[in-house]
Length: 116
Image (cartoon, rainbow, N blue to C red; front, side, top):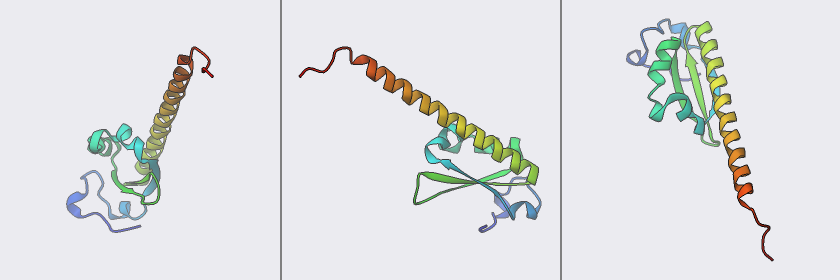
């Protein structure tokens, strides 16, 4: 799928070379990355360690999506992919509900009909 990470970049809990051959790939809206991984990806090392995987991200040029590649043993990759997809969907719905509330509040501020 691309070049393999350098040995210095590989976390100790992801060891076998076959774990890097076929990563699980998910596409996440770029605006949701901070909600998932903290400011500037500060929680990525924690997610990797707890999930026993290695994450790699690549921004897609033609859209507002980022590919998140999950490397590791099959079960850990699958579980981490499911977790990230669930968290991204939760954050997306939360932002959508916030926008709907904002729209409702803006509409309720229009107490008087527009003047002609």
